[in-house]
Amino acid sequence: MERWERSCLFVLGGGAYLGVELAWRGATHWTMFLAGGICLCYLHWLDAGLRLPLPVCALLGAAGVSGLELGLGILCTQLLGIHVWDYSREWGNLAGYICPKYSVLWFFLCGWVLWAMRTLRHRLKVQIIG
Image (tube, rainbow, N blue to C red):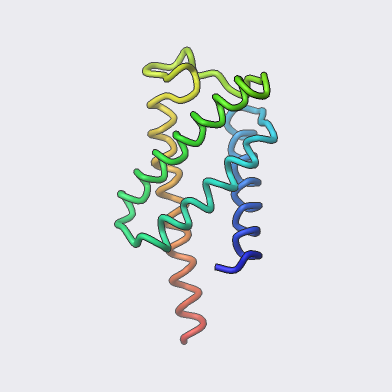
């Protein structure tokens, strides 16, 4: 993948993540742009590089997103002194940074994104070949 393609993927992921956050909770933070960019690049790597079944990729995607949120949450509170989100009232939360409920939602969102990426890739190949 070319550098400009990775950059476009990063910006698309960052913008989408901000949009999801704004739609879901009505607020976001600039660090979520970074999270979204990293997440979409990670999902692309999972899909294009590993060629695993969709549910497995969605599970790995949800684990990756949750892990990234944990890391960013710790980084934001400990290093930057800001609290971007707080899941401490959610069941099964880990220090208020992540919780099972949102990991499950990430599984479904990652599955949809991966399905869309596969569908787009297939349609582009058909148009170019056919």
